[in-house]
Structure formats: structure tokens, C-alpha cells
Image 1 (cartoon, one colour):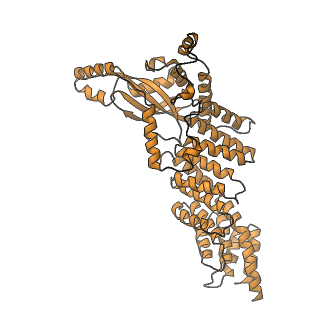
Image 2: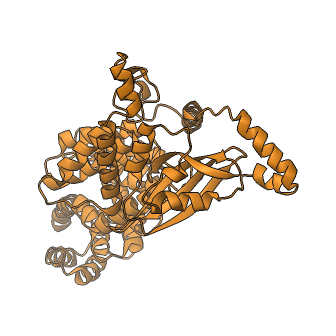
Image 3: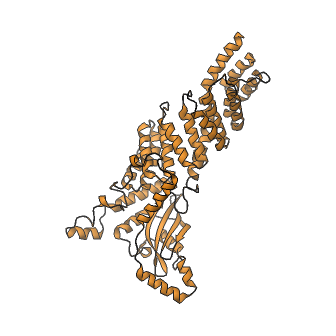
Amino acid sequence: MNQQAFEAGKAAYREGKMTEAIELLSQAKQPGEVSGSIDHMIGNCLMRQGRYADAASSYADAMRDASYGNAGALACNRGRALLAAGRPQEAVASLTMATKDGSYATPYKAYTALGNAYLKMGNARDAGVAFRNAAIDESNPEPSGALRSLGGCFMQLGRAVDAVEAYRTALDFSSSSDNQNAIYADLGMAYVAANRMAEAVDAFGNATADGNFVLGPEFQAAFDAAKRAVTASKSPSETDQLLAMAGYGSGVKDKSFDPLDPLGESGEFMPSPEDTGFFSITEEEMRDLDRQERKHRKRKHSGLKGCFIILLLAAILGGGGFAIYRGFGWPTQDAVATDLFTKEDISGVLSGSVTDDAKARIEALVPSGSTSVKVTGKDSSMLEAKVFATVTLSAGGTQDYEIDMVRDGIGWKVDDLSVVYVSQGTDGASIDDGSSTEAGAEAAAAEAEASAEAEASAEAETTAEGEASAEGESGGSN
């Protein structure tokens, strides 16, 4: 080792002169020499310059020096560099290696980067496992970040109740008011996805209470929908009033025992974290549960009279019968969906089976002043249909909806409406195809790339300089 060049390279590094430091440190190595301390610091310099692929190579060179040690830190830094260079699969291999080093003092850093790498690959399940390990690592001074990321993974997997618990735990460990506001906003979205509207209103209210945090369009739309739903739920329907006057209490049955409680007020039928656990079931089991839940919640329409009328029309119309069987009608599903979000009075587009309470809930979910409606998908049969629509909001941004429709003569009427969030997915965009995780994965990857330089250099700088100093002393004695 050229000790003079090495010391000069360290001095340039401390002064922020990265190009000069790389040149001097490169001169410090003799031809064919392997030096973990030199290559480690060169890797840090390259990271600061945004030369991520070169940094990954330099860290790999440092790992060849068995006498240098620090395998966990080097593998972590190399994984971060590979992730920032857009090579997430290689990053996963390197970061996994870092987590296997029992002498690595801060494995939560590797687990956090590993979670971001899995998100970049669209693998929310394994990303969640990594974030969970980062959160429970005792060396992690700020586990709230990992817990928030874990909540995001649960949302992408359609497990809103578990996301609620992750976000609530993140709040317990959060020390920054700015972070708390953002976590409260995420918690509000999780409550909405879990149909716990009153709690969603409280969470969004906490997020905006100090006036320092502004909700984005999607979050604001969810906040407004939750407030309207809570307001509508507090107004008894005419049927409830008549039943109360007749001495039958507030309704036909106690909501706390109703598995179809639309607002989730009772919470009795929400799965608890103790029952579900963190990633304790397979994705195939989750899909089966989702199908069972959809089947259970699906409205039962006897439709015998309707079937007879439709079959009669099919016989009269001849070739049009097949079209009706495939879901066509007049007015069309697209026209009904557009009328639902653009007409001031939606009574004309609602099915006769929609109760007053259900109508109030649907009206609460319809945004005011919608500027456009785009039908993005359909799942139709002869008597029922699910229509997926994206509505452009007057305040900016868009919101996705799932519209349940039923046959009305030769046309269609709206039977139910629900808000669809990115984390939930739909029949048209399941977890498997990756479409519901793309936005979250890209955002997490962008965040990882933006912070990789600072984090990786902070991870390695102290260790590298300490080891470099020790090697410098031994070189001087030689």
C-alpha cells in the first residue's frame, strides 16, 4: 500500500472531493493488491457520485479481502448500490448475504434495503417479511419506518386489518410529528379499506390537525367519502323509524351480529391480527378467502320474473338474445355508470332493491363535481355485472370504483357501489398480476434510489475509516 496516497485520498474524501479521492485511493493500491479498506472507501466515493454500478463492483472487490472482514456491511452496501443501479434481483442476493452475517451490528439496514428490492420486483409478500425483520431488530433506532412499510405491504396484499395494526404500532414508535401525520394518513386509508369509516375519519383528522400536512387527491377523496358515510350512517332510514315506532328497536336485527355490517361499526367480524398473524397464510389461501368473501357478500336475486321477461325478449329479438346473455342492454352499463357519477339525482339509476340506507351510503361515496367517468373493466353475466370505473375528481386526481349492477328489463341498474384503492386490487387486477403493487413498488424504489447514496456512505464511512486507519498504522510499522 502507498501510505502517502492513501492518507491523501482519505483527506480528499473528508473534504468532499470525490474525484480526487478516487484517483488518490486508486494510486494507493499496488498492482494486483487486494485491499478491503481502499476498495470500501472507493465504493463510498462512487456512491456519492451516483456511479452505482461502479460502486457495486468496488464493494465486491473489497469483499475479496478476507482479512478486512466487515462482510455484512460490504454486502449491504453492494446490495444498495445494485438496487440504485436498477438491478434488484442481484441486490436481493447481496442483501440476503448481509443478513446472514452474525457479526453484522445493524442488520435492519440490510433488511430495509431488501424490502425495497422485493418491492421493486413486485413481490409485496417477501418485502413485508423483510420489513418486519427490520422492525423487530433491536439495533433499529427508528422502527416506525419499517412498520409503515410493512403496513403498505399488507395493503398491497389486500389485508387491510393487518395494515391497521402495523400503522398503529408505527405510531407508537414514531418520534417525528411529520412522520406521524403521514402514518395517520396511511392509517386512514387502511381503515377505509377495512370499512371502518368512523375510525378513518379520526385518523385523517389527526393527520391534518396541525395544518402542516396536506392530503393528496386520493387520500382526500377517501377522507371525504368516509365523512359522508359516517354522516349517512347516523341518519335512521324511514324503515328503521317505523320499526322503532312499532316497538321493534332500531332495526330488524342488531348490527353487532350482522356479518354484512357495511360500515364495520361492530368490528365483530373483522379478523384479528392474532388470528391472521404476519404472513401466516399462503397467497393461494388468501385468494380462496377473497373468493369466499365475495360469494358470501353477493346479493341474492331470485329474478324468476326477470329471467322470464329476458328469455321472452331474447326469443323475440332472435340474434339479440345472445347479446343479452353476454351482458349487453339498453341503457348500457357504460351509460348507467356515467349517469351515476354525473347526475344530481341518482334515484333513476338505482335498482328497486336498494334500501334507503344503501342509497344514502352510495350517495355518500359518489364524489361531487366529477369531471369525467371512464369504464376500465367489466365482468358481466345475463343478470348481474361488475363494472370498474375511474372517476376524475373536481379537486384533481382520480378515484377508482367498483359498481355492482343488476338486470332491469333489457337495461341495467346500480345495486351497490364501493371505493377501490390501489392496495385492494379487484377481479380485474389481482395481486398475482402485479398491477396493484406497481405504484407502491415504483415509489419505494424511487425512495431507495434517492436515499441510497447517503445511507450507503453513512453505513460504511465509519467502519471504512476505522479499518483504513488500522491498516495504515500497520503499513507504517512495516
